[in-house]
Every structure is written in C-alpha cells, then in structure tokens.
Length: 83
Image (cartoon, rainbow, N blue to C red; front, side, top):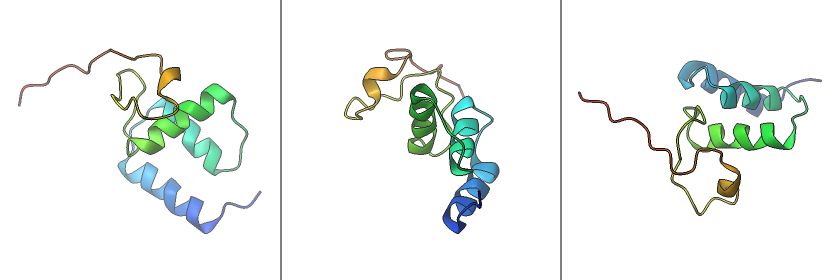
C-alpha cells in the first residue's frame, strides 16, 4: 500500500520531533496503513494529540477527551524536574 503525501510528512515529523514511545510506534504503523487493535489506536491517538511526546505513563490531564476514560494512568503525575 502506498503512503499518501500527508502521511509521509507526518511520519517525517514524528521521526524528527517524536520520542521513542509505544504510542509513536503505533502511530507510525497506522500512517503506513497497517491495522491496529482498539487499544493500539487509543495509544496512537494519544501520541498524536500530545505532539508525539506521549509515552503513556502519565496522566495527560485532558478529561474532556473522549478517549480519556480508557487512559490507564489517570491520576499519575509526571515527576517534577528541577532545572
């Protein structure tokens, strides 16, 4: 299956700016036209929504999102990093 021009651009953005997270891996799989399970699709959308930086281990704190009820880490805060 050929990858559309728009999907190629998104794949390049993920490679350039994204983290090596499971969500990003699944998002790339989706953009290449591969099938995802429902759970994989949720993780993929979370990575897309957070600008390719979601690792899925912390609460995104977006309760208005229709997928938020399925997030496994609701209530888990990211560690505070001193600069």
